[in-house]
Image (cartoon, rainbow, N blue to C red; front, top):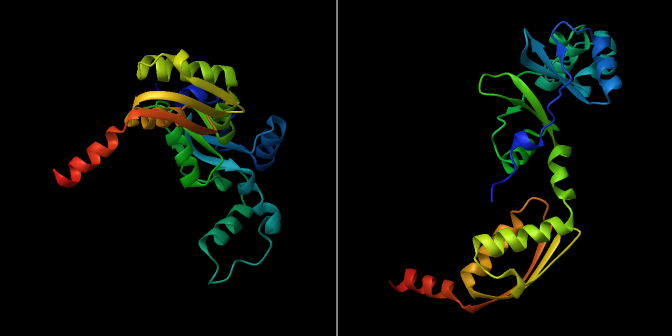
Length: 228
């Protein structure tokens, strides 16, 4: 089973701002569209991002009228002080753009968001053009799949087509994304593969694996590795 891609989850219509967009117009853009950040384009190409956090230094340092941060102030503090006197998107934006390719997997995107510590990734094609935006909320939509849809996928795809097991010989239930499976499979390795595939299924919250094997082929493999 193929994992959902960034392209299948992203928002394609992206609100953007030009590098010369004024400070007040940036605020209006965020407020009017109920968004927390906007990519900044220069000649049609993404060069940075302006978020609510990039606009707050104007208030924090009172438009640059507060004293210049001291010698021992951190880089982040000095950067915010510089942003406080900014009048255009070019002045206040954060660069470079945190981006991702449209063909990458949803799990890769989730990892990128976590590592970068950002709320969204802007999706750029192979030429570097902006084609969408992927937010944490877009990824969380995977968990609103209906229980019946998940149950059907587990029965027909995982057991029926991948493991070649008669789904009617097993008990499969899904409640609020939590999957319960019980019954018998031929080998222990199949029990483990089944749980792995179910856990990897988008929308699954947890798995109660009560499957039992006819024989444990994993023990034999382990002994062969040790004594062989």
